[in-house]
Image 1 (cartoon, one colour):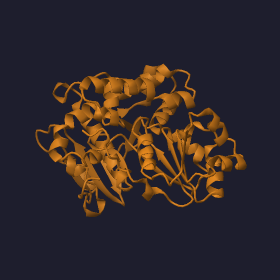
Image 2 (cartoon, helix red, strand yellow; image 1 turned 30 degrees about the horizontal axis):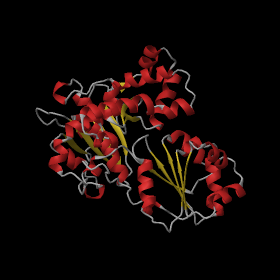
Image 3 (cartoon, rainbow, N blue to C red; image 1 turned 90 degrees about the vertical axis):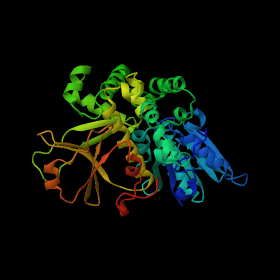
Image 4 (cartoon, rainbow, N blue to C red; image 1 turned 90 degrees about the horizontal axis):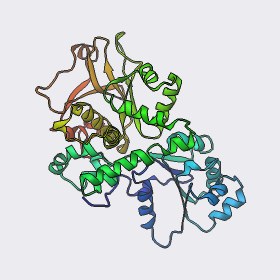
Length: 392
């Protein structure tokens, strides 16, 4: 596989709007910096680019100073400013507002691997002055630009086990992939949370992730987590919220529109990358040797669908559905008032039907069972034509 995999936002020019800051959010190590530098290098020598980072102490102080003259002198003569890891800079939103108001012709790009911190700092100062986009680990759609359907399906088990981080996908051996994933989970994954939120007990955060990794596809009990970790429920909720906002966990909540016996107050948590999840439990066995392959397939498909919707600018609400009588569906998408239901089966002996009570209650809803045979069709997202089309 090519070491330089083309990303969905390869041409960033379409996202550059007058008087707007382009803000690219996403987990660490998904390629945000590489993507932007590649784009900036393509602009040629006539475009002067100023590149800096929230890790640069001297410029961190300058950008957080809110001194108009200082900021204008710093950016003078440049056409484009790129600020990497901008969440590390105090008052960055006010600093960027000063720049964009005083120099509306200036192109500004910022990245953040912590949506909770950067979004807070950019919030009010840049209301109406930013274009936020998310970059995830590689998607099936992005790989599809270099691989045909047969090759995608042939590599499916590897995607499930080792995930979709760019470094993992370009590694040449399983041993290298495991090494990269261990480094990610131990050295980078929680870095922003631990640094920016001053977590006093990082081991508790790590233990929480390990517990969640064993409950993928199941509803999570905050009381149970609290008891097992020895911390109060409010702390559990706070940690889970931070893990969501730092692109480690994805929260799927229960759906209800009509029935009194539908479960709505619980959550399921999925990992933004299955390779990270498997590294946390140190299980890189192939599907045939796994007891959790159903949950792993469900996790992978839900996140790939999320990527496909995001990159196609399709805004739908998603949920799981369950009744107290244990009738359930893995994923419900609510798009413009119409429901689309999905059940994920790795190796179905027969194709299950939608629960009768769901069919009766939501008669207009579609229902699809997603397997390794038809998952590419499921990821061809075009809501205007019944979810068919070309992979992004």
